[in-house]
Length: 138
Image (cartoon, rainbow, N blue to C red; front, side, top):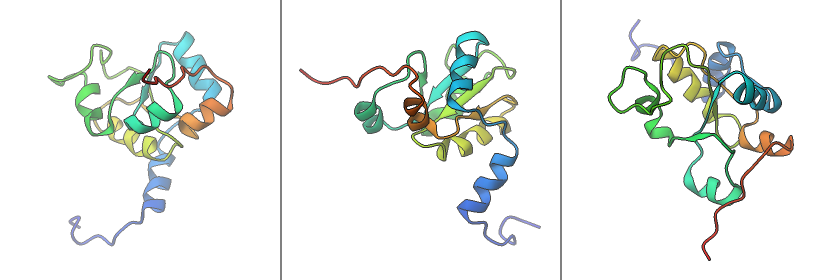
């Protein structure tokens, strides 16, 4: 059956399907994985949210529309951190929705350990984990 012949899938159903294939992590587990196990935290929030709420220390900021190009270990536009397909990547957005879809996309590229942060940046902050304050113009 071609994609044109398949019935539409709503976003809630798609999100459920995607998340069933991910080993999603809670905020403290993401912090620990980055601190001790070499996991790469990737912040895909758009600039206005980062400017409003701040940044997670050590997280790689990659705009969502560049994510696959920056993290593909075989890509010509990859970041230095994109070393191989075994890299553990934990994607975070603001509340943990877009990050699930982004992690699934990274898995399609062969980054088989890619996942996302349950509750996103907001869960990280609520857990009292480190956040750099927003940069303000003087």
